[in-house]
Length: 75
Length: 198
Image (cartoon, rainbow over all chains, first blue to last red):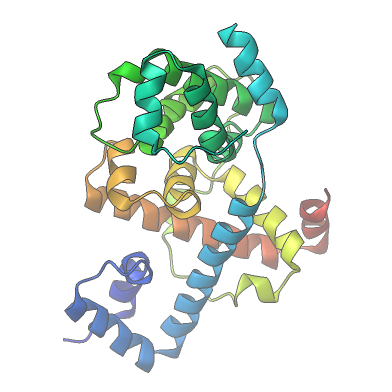
């Protein structure tokens, strides 16, 4: 029986992460090919994850004061 | 500082023997991802430094206790997570408000791709802001898995969850992030201007 939209949505993270068994991956992909709504949701979901990874990995180097604090604490 | 070719485990063995240079090299290697995690869990740069300092000092003191059941990186994150949770519990002021879980898991969002709606820099600020408003459990799993790229098994171990339970929490957190981000993007111009202010 083909997957429903809710079932595909529930598996979306595992699908995006490449963690579904092959048979299930094929079922999700078949659904995405036939359901424009789910395809848009899937694309938007992936885009959000990409933004999360790209923007949050880029910033926030540890401040120089952290090493100074460690040095002071270790004596 | 010269970058050491030694793997983390070898550096940590040296640290266990009191080698402060090995410790400096370990700090240099890991301080940025640790700080990056802490600043988003503690929501305060000073507290984040407190947490990272506490975690690294624990690593210095307890290096001999590392048994190799995980990577050194995962071990450091486990110490840091406890430090962040401790600081969060003792933090004065209002707790972070998060979206109700049933809203986050409701009908999937139909919003177009977020980048199409705002500029790149503004979007980065917005993602950060939305992330800071998520439930700490959601933030933790997103930061560990999606930002720091720890394996699913390591994240499950750090969160004391089974792998399926971790995956379920991760999916919930991603949906919550997406839902809140879409809500912000669909919000009024004033909200977006505030989000864009440096």
